[in-house]
Image (cartoon, rainbow, N blue to C red; front, side, top):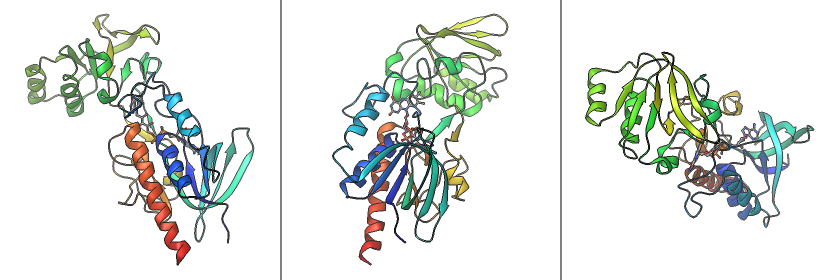
Length: 306
Ligand SMILES: Cc1cc2nc3c(=O)[nH]c(=O)nc-3n(C[C@H](O)[C@H](O)[C@H](O)COP(=O)(O)OP(=O)(O)OC[C@H]3O[C@@H](n4cnc5c(N)ncnc54)[C@H](O)[C@@H]3O)c2cc1C
């Protein structure tokens, strides 16, 4: 059987674009399926990306697409992949194009670079301010709000760890737990020692607009906590069910498990970027996409020369 592509890359964020570049330079026939906005789309800037610190997310993606242009074997398409079926030596992919047309193709390998989704608390203000002044990652945005009054949202051990981390960027940090914080005496002591405040009242809403940024946290008892930004580590979900649908193993935290060659437990199905275990940053996603591309090219070369 002949396959339409050597590699189908699903997802055109940092991981997918970087994988497509490496594979294009290996002269592999690549289809890059660009299925919509990336995780950081609501953010004004990408920070900590070597040589691109502060670039707009859309501009980074545009550069990634532009730099695929010299490689004729790489085809990028507005395309949402809806289903992957395992074949003897590859996969059949079906989906829908950006124009709403049905799509079908075969491919020898698949790289999933579909990212993750952040599940925000269902409280007014979180979604509206997400990416601007409701933030998840101090490595990405801590510097921009340094020395400002900051809130850290969450409960239990996790919020204590995050608040202690955030205290590197500001001496004015208050934990807001939205009801009982489930904090041990030791946890409270650690916060106190670092000068971190604690508010356990239920939260009514976050006050502010995307233009002005966060102004304060309003509690249901009518009191306020003034702050310029709020950090939280929201739970995450896989953006796409493709890996799970094929029976790929997920970790206890819901990431797609991969071996040292970026391959999932489904032979020929690879994964990279935020969707696999590890730290989540655009540069790291790009690196893991590139690594997966090298691993796929080497596996394909073994097949080609057998
Ligand atoms: C608000 C915010 C701000 C951030 N700021 C920074 C920062 O400043 N610096 C930094 O390094 N990192 C930052 N990050 C983290 C960064 O966004 C991620 O690490 C990075 O986007 C991961 O890249 P990825 O390619 O794995 O996934 P993504 O960038 O999320 O790309 C996945 C792509 O796959 C597509 N897709 C999903 N399913 C399908 C399908 N079935 N078919 C086709 N396409 C599909 C999605 O639409 C998306 O375009 C931020 C994250 C957030 C939430």
